[in-house]
Length: 79
Picture (cartoon, rainbow, N blue to C red):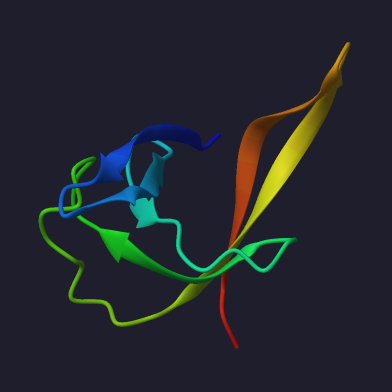
C-alpha cells in the first residue's frame, strides 16, 4: 500500500509516495493520473533513481461522507 510521505526537496509542489520500499515523485496530473512520474531514493527526493523509467500513477479512492479520500496508489510503468 502506497501513501504520501513527503515533498520533493527542490519543488514543494511535487508529492512523494512510498510503499516502504520504493519512492515515487508524482508529476504532471492529467485529471485522472500523474503521467510523468519517476523513482527517487528517499522521502525528500534528494536523489533520483538511476532507473530512467517513467511511471503512470493512479490514485485509488475511498468514498467518505463529504467526497473522496485517496487511500492507495496504483503504479504502472509508462508505455
